[in-house]
Length: 499
Ligand code: NAP
Image 1 (cartoon, protein in one colour):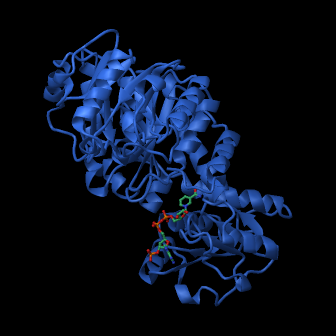
Image 2 (cartoon, protein in one colour):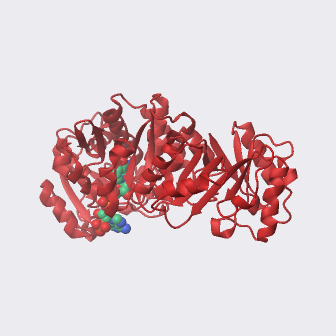
Image 3 (cartoon, protein in one colour):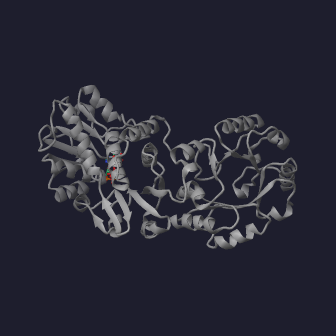
């Protein structure tokens, strides 16, 4: 069950949001009294409530906004019990001073905004001993293993326990808590109105992650990156899982570089079924794999892992996605093909990171004469050596004309949408312009190239293709590319960056 926390300054807004949530089949809300400005009317909030409530009033030390006296706060909590609130949330240092009364259930809670304590079992035992109907533990995750310890603590607890790790490292626990046995998880009214670090809006929790259908048999996939908050892979993969009716969920795993080895070593404890791998782990991941496809060998980098009984298999789906995206546009354009170099004979790849390397390799394999240009010239030269292609200084990128220009830098990506890596006066109508940036799809480079009459390949096209190849590897069936495409478009159409 998803419990939505409502934190608003006015009673009428709290009541309106409560009503709206109940109308949308939300069956539990948390009313945060500490957000209410002025005198709090508990009775008014509870009267005619459209669905059950948890009454909570947090002090500053617990991440709340309560500005009144402690005496007044405890009085509010006692009033909520007298008024038969369904649940009341009592922090562990006050729980024993407020006695059980009537039907109101007691949530005994502990918050730690700095760390996840080493002995969660002892902490749980202490909270459970305070006449708790539900134990709630919310702690900051500083390490991916904190999530595992939290979920394992929930799994073995004898009384209903909500265990959540805060912060973006902790996001997986919010989504997987029900799978471990929590009676509910907390979500916010909107993605951008968080009441605690790392919270997710209820609609994303319900519709993207399908929280209510996650069970102990649900397989776990995800993207591992640092940072990961900007990634649209969860949106795309969860949409395809829904469309294909697969019992799996795809999560964002933020894993710092120095914690990656341990994260992979702990894969069985989640257990992980498959991962998308991105910056900064695409190369270091190769230390952990037992097999790899030819593209991974050629590139020295993987973007996909499949965990199986015989080990971890690594794949790279970027190269094929880039080539197929280009090929599709060329086929549309006068029936040209990429292979073996018909249509596009020369290409300039801008950037020298993982994407540039993957695109350069794909084009070389098709017989295209590739030149790489990069801000850090040494990186372009390295690709040149490894892939047997040319390298030019960043300032020399306009010196020769090319049939195809590929942007494999983040230039033009949200929020820097007014930037382009290639000035429009150097674009020509015969060129194919391929921008790997997918957020937004219509980058400044794409818009200017379209106006000039160039053929266009967008990052959305490549992104959906690489994701659907991953999907086929993991689920042994074709993804609904349309559902991936639609989900990506919806997410990028929003002016705000998804969190
Ligand atoms: P990366 O490994 O960090 O490489 C980024 C490259 O861009 C580096 O060569 C970097 O130069 C260069 N660069 C960054 N900012 C620049 C600037 N302001 N001016 C000039 N050069 C700049 O990243 P990546 O994995 O290759 O990804 C690059 C981009 O490709 C991403 O931002 C994403 O938009 C896109 N991408 C798209 C897909 C897709 O499926 N559509 C897949 C992967 C990537 P330095 O070496 O000097 O830092």
